[in-house]
Length: 118
Image (cartoon, rainbow, N blue to C red):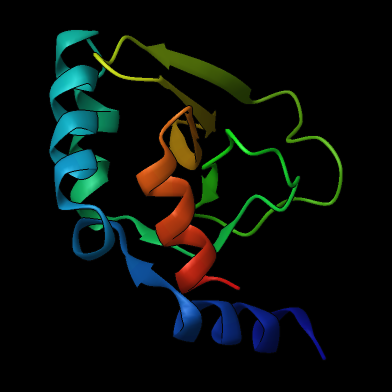
């Protein structure tokens, strides 16, 4: 399968973040604006989850909104750490675009991701 075909399949399987996790979406937007990242905050409402982390850790609810890279993200990668009231939220940002959201220590998110992306 070529890269275009793979991208189409991923897009068909993607689920809007705001539909899966409306409260988390609102929280991400709020925390990003609060942190001084308005460009990233504006992306949140357009994000779709394409897959979840499959590390198997019982505290991990990380998900990808861009296809997972083969290896490292590269030199244009940065992390944006947020300060939620519960758990931890860390965004992987590549070239000023949100690529993944690390949601740690939130069982409800992890369980929903496992159901949606077995």
